[in-house]
Length: 457
Image (cartoon, rainbow, N blue to C red; front, side, top):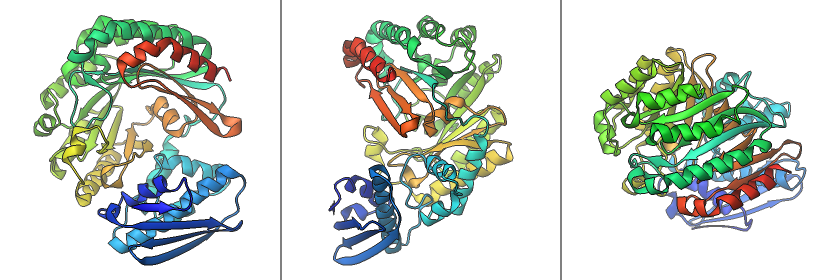
């Protein structure tokens, strides 16, 4: 149990507690205060007393809250790290976007490295952040009116064991598809006046290729009037068991520039264990099919899947490199509530994951890839991260904009979160749609009105 005299701190402190095995069973009492120049944090943990002080000048309530969280989490991280003799790769950084913190330091005229060192981030990860920032050069742009468009298609052939998304097998949800496509069409038509400088379009899921070719064409046709500047256009093709030339033809016809082949692993044993209904040979077929089209290709891999050995994961990295896609994204398994794998897996051995991540970084660097975006999630196995790697000149604009939150994001469909940036005020307003498809359909017209009101500000 954890308590604090500062009302907004317990959830933040619990993010640190969850990093350390067994720490959730500890009794932790936190007392914090700020006297105008110094943040004081005192902890009592199972009767032992700890204290830390950090000097800082604060301007405004937002900065006070930010620094209050930072120093309390740092103090608790150091205590638990010493108690357990465990150091974690991102130290006391529990936020999902380390690069945003780095950019904030750079924009304030300071190098980011001293802050990251103070937050106990490893030298390897400080170097990774430096490489990501370099990889975003020429794409990273904070400018009012920039916008990305996201279309949610929450339909899949089957649900994977690690997945916590709202997707369900399309056999159970296909009955909603005609009405869903109609609602998407209305949302997209209503979005036209809200889009400023469109930087990218991203159709995700789910597995968009779970739709039939004519259904997918209906979605792309509704997007076409909005994408008049030839900007980047991604469709998450997804799993090879739904790949067809007809669907790739539709993508080519409507000007799609990038597709994602979500391999996750090239081990047949692993694919079966996570509930995939395809083999590594099917992945080979999908990559070969994609070669006949002018798309850039992204391949997703996940470190830490059910029972997968270090050797099997490394073989998957090598297989992905051999296909030479323009992008390779390496995810760390995220044990979220709602995923079947969450129920079956308590914690994954940290050393095994560290070997996987380290190998992916070495192998991809040697193959000429550079990291261009990274983000973290709560409950990530081993407290690692997700990293997008790219060949020179092929970084995905959508991923940079979304992860760094530097452009408006207009999102349509079920379980879609739109974000409106107010750059002059340094804030973001969000608008989320229902996760449940029937609820979304019932509220679609009202959602359009709500989004219009947000983006009209």
